[in-house]
Length: 417
Image (cartoon, rainbow, N blue to C red; front, side):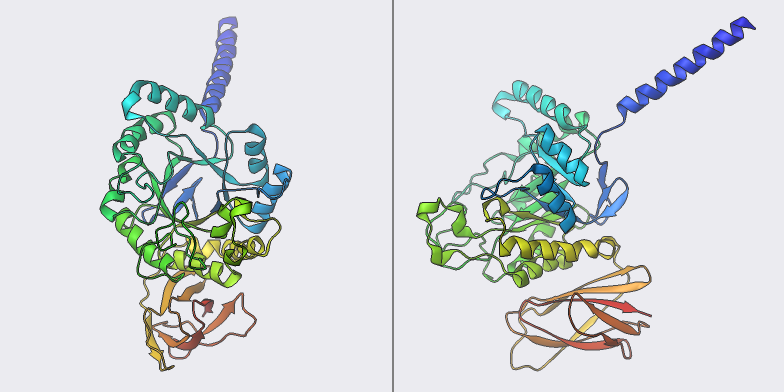
C-alpha cells in the first residue's frame, strides 16, 4: 500500500513537471498563419490587418502607453516596435499585435551572421504581443539603380533558419513599388507575407529627394493619380499569386516633411486628405490586399488633421473587419454605366462579402471624373443601407440599384433580405 502511495505521489509530481514543461514550451505572442485566400489567421481567427510603422510622432513626446492606447482605440491591430521592454509591454497591454525586425543573413559572413540571426529571433519570439517577424525592408530596391540591395538568396537561406527558431510567427517582407514582378518573385521563398509601399499624394514639382524619381514621384506607372494604389495591388498579386498574404503600405505623411526643417518649401507640404486616405485604403482592400499598414506618421505633426483623418479611416475599416475578413461569396455583379459626359477609364471597383446574414458591397470609383452606374445580379437581396454616409438607403429592385460616385469616391453598402 505504501509503495502504491509513493507511486501515486510520484505520478502527480511527474504530471506537474510535464505540465510545467509544456507550459514553458508554449509559444509566446500571437500564433499567425494564413488561409488559402491569403487572409491572416491570428490565433486561428481570420483577421484583416490594420497596422502602422510608428506609434509616436517626432513632433510630440508622449507616454508610450498613451500612444499605444490611441492606436488601439482608433482600430489599429498591429504596430511595428523595437525590442524595448516598455514598448512591447505597452503594445500588449493595449491589445495590439506587434512585428519586429530581425534582419537576415550576410552571405559574405554567413556563419557569424547566422549565429546573430538566431540570437535575435530567440530574443523576441516569445514576446506576448508578437505576430510577425521582418527580415529587411525593400531588399530588391536601390535608389536610382537596378541593383538589388539585398540578394534574394540571403532571404531564402535565412527563412529556414528563422522558422527553425520560431515556427509560430509569419515572416514579413515589404517591397518598393518599382522593381519588376520577376525580380520580386525571387524573394517569395524568403518570406510568408509580401507588402508594398506606395505614396501617391504628391504636389508635383518636388526637388530631388531620396526615394523619388527624377520626375519627383515615387511610383513609376503611367497613372499618377491616387488610383495607382489599386494598379500596384494588381502588380503585387502577380508577385504573390492568389494565396499568399499581401499588405499595402499607405501614406501617412507629406513628402516635403521628410526634409530637414530649414530645407523645406512650405508651398509643397501636402498631406493626404480624409477622402484620399479613405479611397486608398478601401481601394487596396477591394482590389485584394489582406491588410493595410501606414508609414510616415512619425514625420507628421501631432496632433494634425492628417493623423485625425487616418484614424477616422482606420475606425471605419475596423468596424467592418468582420465582413472584410469573410470569404468572397459566389456572386457575379454586373456594372452598367450611365452617360455623364465622360469616358469611364476605369470606373467602379467592387468587393462583395457576406457576413451575419447581410451582403456587403465595398465599392470605389477609380476614375478621375464622377460616374453613375447600375449594379445588378444581386439576387434576392431587397434593401441596402449606405454605411458611413449621411443619406438613406433604398430598395433593391429586380436584383439591381443605381448610384453615383464622386471622383475617387467610396461607397460601402449593406444589403439585407
